[in-house]
Length: 389
Ligand SMILES: Nc1ncnc2c1ncn2[C@@H]1O[C@H](COP(=O)(O)OP(=O)(O)OP(=O)(O)O)[C@@H](O)[C@H]1O
Ligand SMILES: [Mg+2]
Image (cartoon, rainbow, N blue to C red; front, side, top):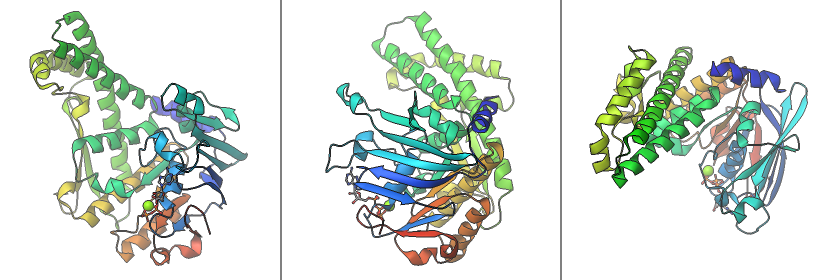
């Protein structure tokens, strides 16, 4: 079971029950020149005017898990534009057996090869790859960019779902990469018109096998999320969720090996039309995460902006509960500009729920008043022009 290895990593590492940052240091990161901020385990609220650097600070934290952070920015965009000194982000985590220092930053050596790479340090030692970060730290976030998640096309939702799977099953990322590589290679062959059917069949075989593994992992994630949603309160709407796709649909009532066969046949059948259209008509890259507002029996894309935001919050709260239960660690929770679109009652309920989860949540917002309900229990900071004042 992939989960077993993920859980073991957490147990092997020195994590306590609830992850929290005790100190964060930024150097030459976006609009920050140098920042050192010490915080307790309670929720943190960052307020300040537009452009002061609130999102930049939570983005810096989001780089301490594998990936490109909550804005999915290119690494070069993170570099403070007024200096060539490489950017760096470091945190100190509180754990049961003392502090754990984790850092990441621009790798100046990578630029000579024109590739983008960031360095990762764990307790002062360089890590082989950023994937190691997932063993030490778990994180969830909600950002304004995600508002469009439920309204837009399948591809954003599929990537979102894959990201959720990745925290439970670190091998998932590799599977998706292998699938996409085989798919691109197959399309290239088809476009070139060379009929190397042995090579094509080998690629289609790789696609069929990885597609089934990807689909099974997505379905497993959906099942776990459904039970976590069922445990949620009544303030945020319950979502009916489902993953739909060629392999996912067949896996409902067919064993994996038969689904693999069916996919191989489908890929072979589509060769000439795929060559003509330059795309692959079926496969794991077409799946969608369908979300329905249960009480209204309304597909999420037809819900109001506020309802979509609430559905998304409910989904992420369920995900955080799931991480807490199954990985035995309460993740860091980043909530960028969350107050927008939420009425007073829902906002207060969200604060209460996050306090009950015991997560060190990092909230950002332009006005302090939106956080009045949370303020007595939170650490309030004012951000101004790339500094905490
Ligand atoms: N690489 C960079 N170097 C210097 N400044 C940057 C860089 N990237 C972004 N900035 C600046 O950082 C500023 C702060 O951005 P940030 O998104 O953190 O603001 P914010 O406080 O979240 O504002 P809002 O309330 O509008 O969301 C922006 O003015 C932006 O121009
Ligand atoms: Mg912002």
